[in-house]
Amino acid sequence: MKRIDIVSVKGGVGKSFIAYFLTKKLSENYNVLLLDKDLTSTISKVYNIRGNLVSFLSGNSFSSDYSKNFGNLTIINLGCSERIKRVEATKLAEVYSNFSDHDFFIVDNPSIPSDICLDKELEAYYTYLNEKRINYNLITVLPSNQVLLDESVAFLKIFEEYIKELGLLLGYDSTDVNFLSSIINMYNSRLKINIDKVYYLTDKIIKIPFIKEAIYTPLSSLPMPKEINQLIEYIL
Image 1 (cartoon, one colour):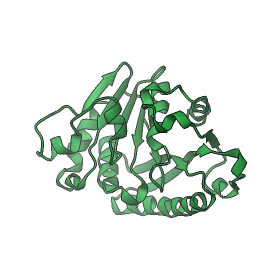
Image 2: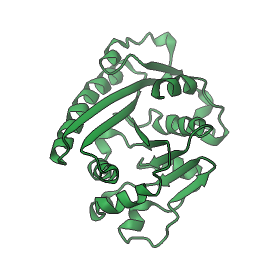
Image 3: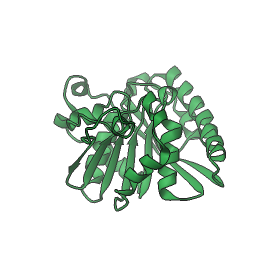
Image 4: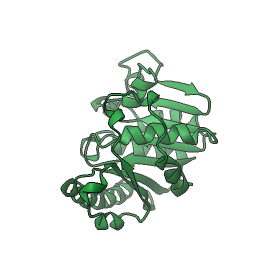
């Protein structure tokens, strides 16, 4: 099972938008597990998942309605909150082991500065794998504002080093951080944004234009962006 984390530094740049369409397209040909780790549980709301895994494992809720299946696609609502501190990594790992037959594990993350579940969830995943090496694959979603884009790239390079240090603290022999693709979402060609610094992360850059309908239309009612096909080529 190949894990890919969709991350951003700033909220509201469209991580859930990318996660929704990427997993929907991938599930046409592969078994896909989508972990909704976002603090707003955007995707879980789309799929009408009311429970969450952290509440169930921490004993705060007896409802096991934290996941749903739609053909080849399975969605788990993690319910990222402070309660994850009361959940043993091995308990999360046991849940992950139930989906070992899946081809892809896609994670819709909170913005990095607000991700209070990062350390525990990664520990759980690699406990499930029972490996001594972390292979952390990222799709980064960047804002279309020049200043915010440049700041995001700088922060992501710091984040890369943090993940490597985390791997050492958790006792792993080595940690690889791979930027599979960077997406500049809501891109406006008229703004003439300089994307040279994005190449510090990857040369697999995708520009998705601003979609006005996405402001007021549910994800489930929007057409598949054609750029998702290019993204899939980059991650396969």
